[in-house]
Each structure stands twice: as C-alpha cells, then as structure tokens.
Length: 453
Image (cartoon, rainbow, N blue to C red; front, top):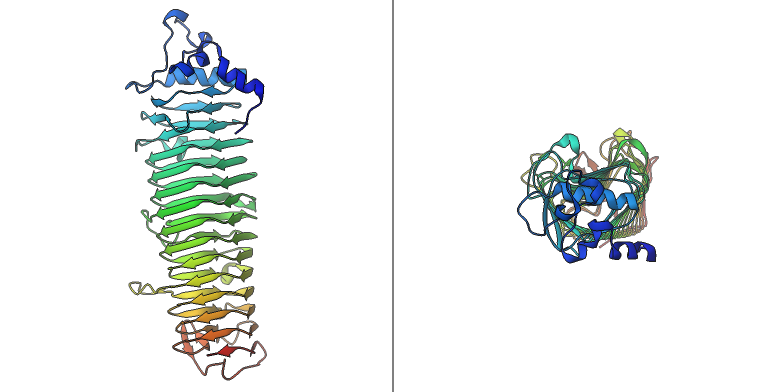
C-alpha cells in the first residue's frame, strides 16, 4: 500500500498525543476522547498487557480517521473487543508483529460504510472466542464499504469465519487465514472485488465464498490464492468442504489458484452464470474437483490440472437450467471411485449435459469413464472432439435415452480402455457395441473419426 508524502509525514510526526507515542511503543488517547482525564495521566496503549485496551485504541482510531491520517501501531499483543472502524480508517501494524487479540464479547472488529478502509501489517487473533452472529459471521465483518485495501494481514483462530465482506468493493490481497471453524473469506453482494494472492488453510467448512443474495452480476476475481485443508465439519452433500464456492454470482473469474486437500470440491459454481475457471491446480479432492451446477448459463473451464479426485469436471443439472459450457485443454488424472457410497460412486473424468463443447482435454486413469455425455434424457447439443482418454474403464459414454438431444463424438484418441472406447449408457450402465469400432450416424448422434487403440 502506498501513501503520499503528506500521509507518511502525518503518520511519522504524530496525531497529537495519540500517534506521537506509537513509535515509542504506546499510544495515548486524544484529549478530546478522554473526557475526565488530564493530559498528564491520559491512559496509554501498552503492548503485551493482560487487560482489555479497547477504549484507548478505539479513541485513537477515531481521531486518526477524523484527521485523515494513518494510525501506526507498535509491535506487541493488544487485547480488544468490539472495535468499530469508520470511513477513512487506515490502521497499520508492524509487519505482522502487531497482534490484536479478541478479548471476548458480541464482536471483534466491524465496519459499516467505511469507504477507503485500509488494514495492513496486522494479526487478528480470535482466540476461538465465540461472538454474536447478529453482529457478523467473521472475526472481521465489513459492510457497505468501497475502496477497501486489506493487505498483508493474518487472521487466525476463529470460532466462526475469518473475513466477512457485505456489499464491498476493493482488494483483499496477501493475507493469511488459518484455523477457522467455518469459512476463510466470504463476500456477499460485492460490487467490484479482487481476492488475490491469499493463503487460506485449515477451515472447517469452506475456504473462499463469493455469494449473492439474488442472482446477478458480481464480477469478483479470485486469483492466485493458495487454499488447502478444507474440511466438511457441517456435513451435507456439497454445501461444505469446498475451497472456492461461487453462488448466484455472475461473471466471476477464478484463475491460477493452487488448491489441495479439500473434503469435497476445489471450485464449485452453483447457479453462477458466465463463470470462468482457468488455469487452476487442483489436487486431492474428495468429490468433484471442478463443478458447474444448477441454474447457470455459461461456464468456461479451461487449462486446469486435476489429480486425485472422485470426478474431474462436472457440468450438470440441465434439468434445473444448467447449460452452455466450454470445457477445453484440461489435464485430468488418477481419479477414484467412492466405493463406500451406496450411490453416486463417481469415477468420471468429465461429465457434461447440455449445449457444450468438450475439446482438447487429456484424461488418464478414470475408473468409471473418461467422458460421460448426458444422464437419461438430460442431454442436448454436445460436441466432444479432439480429446485424449487413456487407461480408463470406458473411454466415452453417451446416454442412450431416445428423447435425448444431439451429440457429436469425433476425432478423439482413446487408449487402453477395459470396457470399450465409446459406449452407449443408460443411467450409468453401458450397453451395445463399441461405437469407436462401429461408427454410428443417426438422427441425433454422430460418431466418426475416432481412434481406439
């Protein structure tokens, strides 16, 4: 974060008695905030003190924001509760050696209508203290704020979520979030937000959430983050256990993230139209690595690498309006079946249903099928061309339902399959001849130019 010369001088030379003492290791409350205290015995902020210092720090924050200068805190641990940040607050720590530790209460740090809020160089430690959900879901809850700049901070040890943003715009970058008993970062109803270069690990339910109250344009970018060790503490069938979850938010870009060790999904788009999922590295996922599901129109899933998941990529729920996708240039390998499940064992490389192109992907080691086209009657206008499928039980399967839509399967290379290169399929059960060796042209399906070895 950069400041102009005037701001730097203001921070260095002082904010009255409050900021002049910051570099000496303590902060005095401004005179106007210390109603019955004379300057001689004004209370000071004391690093590593055992007592709660909320009132002193709150007064200094308010005075700095009123004067439009940064407040620089010294190294040390400060026990505080229910800090409220206002517009123009610029709260800076000493390279993550300044720790604000939650002393308990209804809330830790909140902000509302705090345009221009800057947080940098701080550690926010929730100490696993419980707080009131009515005041916010995260240790830090910020609402209705534009021009956010949250950079180079750490958030840890929360009894709920980490950073909760409601109707915010700005940038969240280079922060570390660990040991959350719910989510790492949650954005609701954003209006121009970048979430980039962060590390999120050890969350009980989800990593990064980009949600909207109602379907609509969002435009958040989620890029260059490292997300790992996301559990599924609250159970369910995919609501929890995801590294990145985009819900009802349109035109979201999810790119170049490094994701590993999640109970369910690396990237899950739910009713998320025009989502772009590009060049992500995804490893060791308990269910589908990349999902685009339910009521969406438009998904571009390209150039991702996926290893060790129950399914590589699933673009599904045509029955709920899920349609229109490009799945291109992905590398998917070493998949597994969930044999412990009574149903939904999976083991597919790519599953697709409607109005989609599946092209130029490489799939190796799919224990059920490399590419699965349609499910029952839910298939329409799918082109599967130029893919390489190796060492899978079946190379490509296509639904045999007579009322399914049109399909083109052309120019794919399919190698070393146990149960056929291209087969018809009825709700997961293959039947009939190998269409790679007996090409088929019918009213709805064309199979041509494929190579099976």
